[in-house]
Image 1 (cartoon, rainbow, N blue to C red):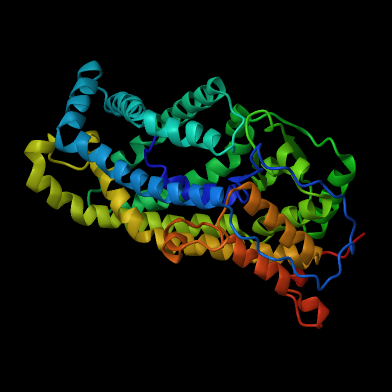
Image 2: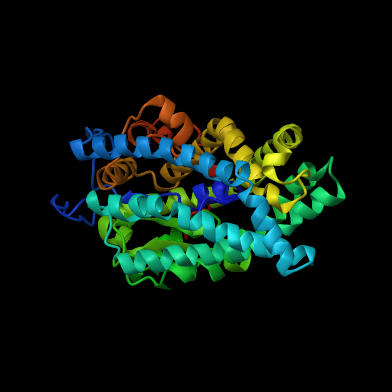
Length: 437
């Protein structure tokens, strides 16, 4: 379902620091896991960037095509709802069922969500299930995929019903400044989502439990203590039954703060690689990337809403007979807002991706400085490339519009080359580290 998810993009990109990194397909022999200790590899040993396989190149090309299709489809669907007057008919139906303004918005959104979900379902099924299985990247059964897909619809609809009335109330009360107030309202909303997602939403889709490898867990907690993250807990997520993806992240804050590792990641990476990965994820937390992304994406959303404010009135005046409404404060305008959000979203996407790539690069630097294990970092990225069927040096235009992380080839190069501690040069984040106990 493609309903105003742009609001969540910044946080999702950050929370899924290694999301999408997948294991080798079943036809490819797996590399043996080596439990290496510190100093196992010579410090100057360079890890080469692997050439992409034919399967990886095919996955990359088809992914690029699907990215174009997704963007065109994401504009076409709301445009059809809008220019056919169907959105206005849904509004009229909702208003007949309830004369209360809030319930009219809720009923409209439920109907609109369900209809767009059904329209999107064939493409979502191909992308999320058929294609992933065709490339050997998923273990998920059709029943499990169907359950999670409908659960996502339910969660998204509930969130929309709870919060969509806010911008429409602001449109009614302040037609000239609604974009500013809505942009400001995004900030506490995103903070709330960060707080509740680890304890209310994530468990709906994942099975969380204590980490089985207590030795690795103690080393992760010791690393977290060095990074200044106190009171954190390590959770292991049982994902191997549904996916071959690798993921590790630090999420939440305050009482909801937690360190999360998927069991697929634990099985695939050796202990030193795991510690670098966790050092990277801890870097996001310690360096305040969550708050930076909240601020940055709130500004982008505010700028996008202002652009919608400037252009929506002209479109409504010209096409009001086809649209079936004459005011942006009418809930029937939702497809117009989504359509313009999609157009302007493409315009600001390079800036958004550049910001997140910078955050990821600095998290890599943090991970290298706290572990000082260049070889483990580089080999971890090599495994991510292999398992993800990734192209290490993609087209620069695609990097501009699609890459929330630096290309893996660049990350492997950086892991090989960044070692200021060997020459006595100052470290960027050494002042943030506590002395080992």
